[in-house]
Image 1 (cartoon, rainbow, N blue to C red):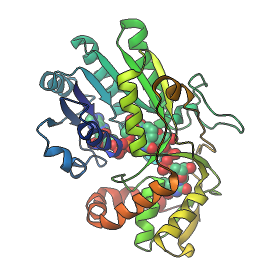
Image 2: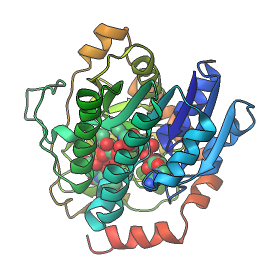
Image 3: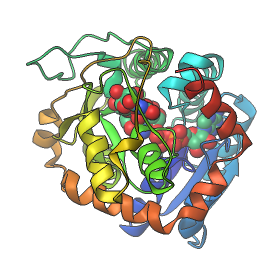
Image 4: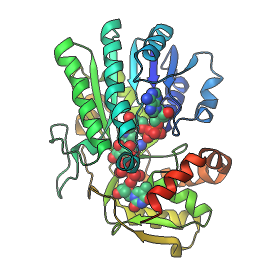
Length: 336
Ligand code: NAD
Ligand code: DAU
């Protein structure tokens, strides 16, 4: 299979590229990526040595860039990861989120329709379901109650992708995964931010009361699930992907403190995120039933591997924390 992977220089996209090439599941992989603050060619260093791999810098919201990528890749399938993916940034500055997540997805879908691309996997998130009250777990029919500009843009792009199946017969599946963690994650999300700060003895900013619950999925388990959906998923269907490991944020932070050996005194209780979703919880029963996929990495093992990676990749962390990162950090945390 010839693949066009958007956002392949980001955290999950680059893990997916490593996974499909390593598993011999693609004849060729072309990554189309704008290389925003979150995209990084270092994440693709291993793949770049593979003759099946190609890279094109471009913007998914620019039709000419998408056209060039499709012409170069001649893909049998598109796996669409590219997004502005951080909730806090979407609160501070929603414009690029709407442009990339909505216009960008639209531009890709149009190109897929025009070129008759045989398969399209739209990578989305459980955030589209909003906060799930106890004791429920969201299945794929749960209402969309998006809270942030990020989650609303993902919900909109999910509906757009599904409309291209219903209206134009494009072979689209949508995946909705829970919170990912693992190596190469940009240090703005909870786990990599806490690990990076803990290793440097910097404050650990916990929003609100720290009792918000997230379901944690190791990135390699997510990549195996996306490949299963690409191969076996049905057209027009949505597939939840969860890690079966729900934890309150403060418990995650305590485990990171234990794993890094830093002082608990680094915890700072800071002003809550506006519109903060209290609990994400989902069932992946449909994906398990239809493909046999199950998460394989226990949270304890995944966290240990992640902490070990950040310990041994301080240079990577230093490089991605550019001036732009410091501006965002001051803006997001400065007045909390
Ligand atoms: P990320 O922020 O690490 O990477 C996003 C990538 O997209 C970057 O390489 C960036 O350069 C690229 N990009 C951004 N705008 C672009 C544009 N206009 N054109 C081309 N490339 C562009 O994100 P991630 O955490 O790897 O998430 C990947 C996908 O998975 C996203 O669609 C996200 O919504 C979804 N998702 C993420 C999580 C999570 O926990 N991180 C969970 C569920 C779903
Ligand atoms: O659920 C899937 C989603 O998970 C993905 O779609 C998003 O791309 C991804 O960013 C993530 O969204 P969250 O908002 O859940 O992730 P984040 O890592 O930003 O925050 C996780 C929890 O930790 C959340 O309750 C807010 C809290 N938090 C986060 C940060 C960055 C803190 O308490 N302190 C922090 O500094």
